[in-house]
Length: 192
Image (cartoon, rainbow, N blue to C red; front, side, top):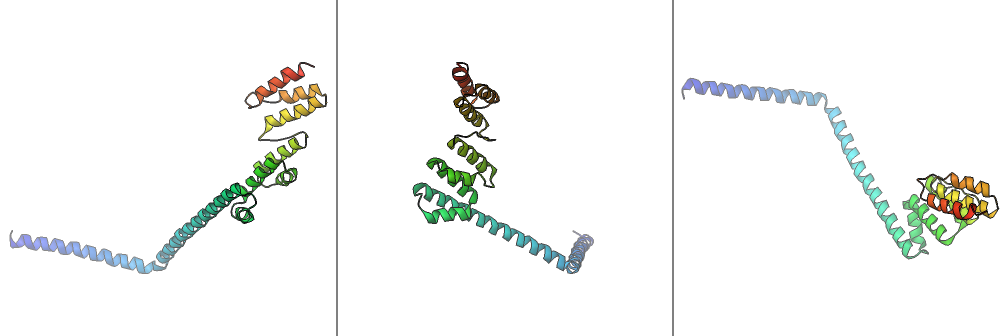
């Protein structure tokens, strides 16, 4: 290599270093100019990540404590500590447990209380079961077919055969109780 080539190469390296140094100075000026904004964004991002981690951790802890309370209640229904823990950590699961217990014990008082629950599923099925236990006509979105069969049974018992037939005819073919309705119509209503 000649001296001229070495000088040219050294000149190129110095030019590259000069460009890099200029870029570093521009970045430093940009950082100084927007330092507050950069720190603000980093702080907000850090707070958001920490908040998300803490919230997820608390939610997971509540779920675990609710599950352990529910399991304790399945073993011992008289465990008041587990009942309170379930009620405070997961009200929806507590409502479901209360519904399950009320059905098991045919407790119409508890079912009536649950029928005004804010959870629409619990209130619907509780209202249905209250009507069935009290031998009254039932209305239900979730147990629609079963409610019609129950209502038809009550109408047949009262001798209102035409009304019972209309009640059974209102059950759709997709309903799981459609075949039961057909059997009831065939053996009970047609015979009269």
